[in-house]
Length: 112
Image (tube, rainbow, N blue to C red; front, side, top):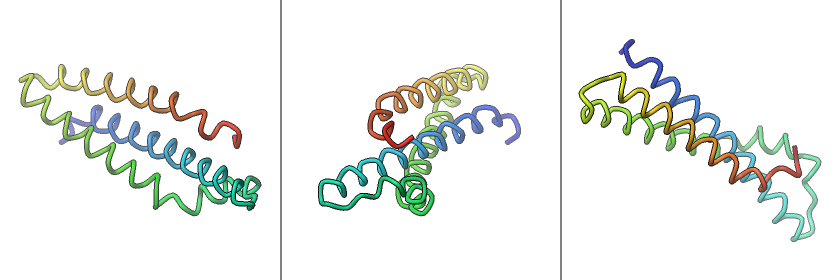
């Protein structure tokens, strides 16, 4: 198991980052929706992010982590070399996570 440490840690760290971005985006959407309904929660943004982590961010973390780890172990079987699978997985995970964060950033930038 120790031989897969770099790829697994990268998969889990990118999943954690994607979960955090998802949490920020969801709460930002909730605040905009509630403002339309007449309630202003914009001062409580960080409190809402912290209290509702298990609903949105944790779910995305688990999904993203499971998929990236599954892809990594499938690539190990297909490439016959751990190093090649590790390089592919690390690069794809980082690129997809950065793209996801860039596309989702406008949804919560007003509250940062």
